[in-house]
Amino acid sequence: MGIEWLVAYLALGAFVGFFAGLMGVGGGGIMVPMLTTLFAAQGFPREHLVHVALGTSMAAIVITSISSLRAHHKHGAVRWDIVKGITPGVLLGTFGGTFIASRVATAPLAIFFACFMAYVAVQMILNVKPKPSRALPGSAGLAGVGGVIGVISALVAIGGGSLSVPFMTWCNVKMQNAIGTSAAIGLPIALAGALGYLINGWGAAGLPEWTVGFVNLPALVLVSSVSAFLAPVGARLAHRLPVAVLKKIFAAVLVLLSLKMLHTVLGG
Image (cartoon, rainbow, N blue to C red; front, side, top):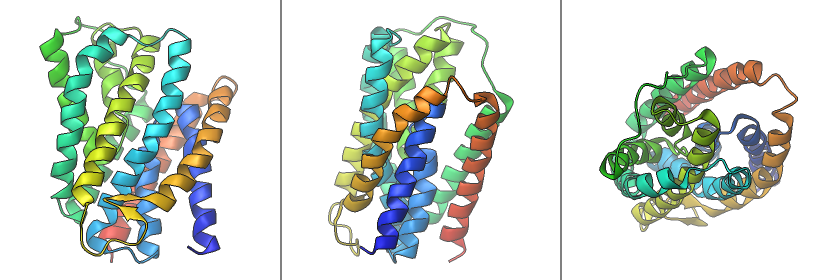
């Protein structure tokens, strides 16, 4: 690996870590389009560009989610009863979602990712918060919701927060608990997703060296090592910076990165 790629992955890790801490996101919305672009520039096979970006991002989110989970647990913000009920569905949905994603061609997968990121961006810009209108469903209902969240999370390599937080607030869970619980749910999503992409990419033809399944190890190590240090910095600044304004900027960045990914994949 050339020094330019080393620097690029470290810079991506810094960017992802900082905004993960600042905005409370897993970072997949940034990592997937950026990794797709970097992988394409390095000559990775076009048919696997998005798959490797998704798998590598999911593996990197494992580390981010552990750090986030611990922080929220210390503040007593995790509703472990919800985590217990939703995790079986999340595990099955995410793991199964990787089998769907691995069988979808690069172009439609990139289009789905871009559309979903546009949805997330609109949520951020408009500051959409569903009004509490019902109670949480029972165990079967939670597992079903977890399955849906898991499948979508696998297809776009996110920790599920953009889906689980609105769902929980809609079910009268306090926002602080919804965010903390979402951080805890992000760990089984990331673990199941990383394992699924590793298995589905195993033996795929034409993958570059140091890529296990659909997980590129150099990118994973470099991005994760920096993001783990920068996430706490972003979290501390969240209480000092105008986060409402930064969220709108971040949303615009997500859209631009998604468009860049579409250009990389569809523009040849």
